[in-house]
Image 1: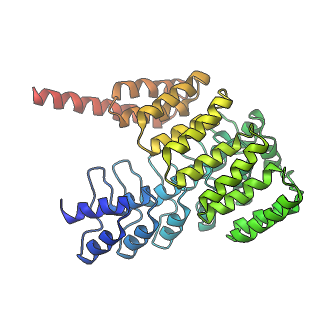
Image 2: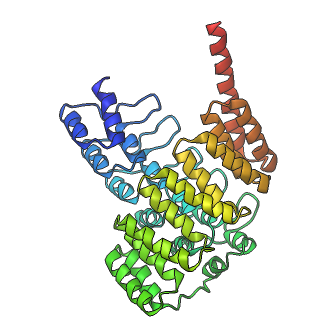
Image 3: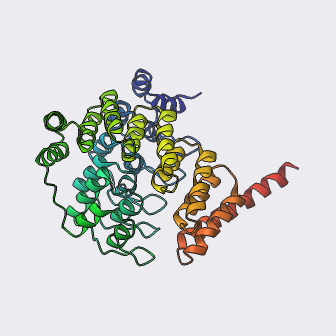
Length: 393
């Protein structure tokens, strides 16, 4: 193995001593593997913050694209790695750059519930009303693909404060406000209409401390609140989430579990525990938490959708397709579900099945050029496969 490839592999597995030595040897930090990944992309995908910092200091480019048109900067936003994203902002990150779906770093972080990443993106000046090729802005994504709970309410509050247009329509002509009403997200409706008021001063102070990166102070507020009323499940979220930011993951999980003991039907907490376990790099345990919520309410698409998202992130596309099939059985006209299914099928090399899935998206949103583009790309891949088979005969 040459040293350039070794740098990518060492960066991915977090071998900091090897990376240091290779950089001292003068390896090429611009070198790409077969997937178009630089060492910086490999380190970013695995949330290797220390190695990312080394590579940035060595001149790695945060805007270099892999074969899927993803950059390390957008990747950090899409995965909620806000510390990496913050570091990249100091090294020339293109704030207006988009992924192959036309989304900036703000959009996937809003979709997936990465509060601190959303905050960092907004502070950096990423356009708040940019819409991707599906026709969704960050606000639309956080409403349509969120659940209106504690976490998404905070994200939506930040987006609105930053100037998000609550009346911006999607491709079906529906605004975030209309979606929130249809989805019965009562708190979100109040936020979007400037009618939401949090009257609990402990929570108000904890939120302010959290957004100011004062996590110990936020925890202290919640400790006082819990001492007064230990049966309020809300307090355990704000305390747990602050512990999570301090990387005190086991303690965060304990807080989330306390809330579930008080109210086992508060499905929001399975989402929090799953994301905490994800950050702990315990994928099977995280997936099990998503599945608990799916079993408790099989008609709720939120948890299954985010489970499928995580499976795609892990490269477990067969399982992601299975989850998408369950979602489409519930909502066959969701063209975004068909689109995600098609992308997983294409990653598996199942191009004919991918075309069938994307045709369902085209049927439900026939004027979107993104879907026809992806269909044509799959047709081209089939053509190449057939040509390759002909050569080998």
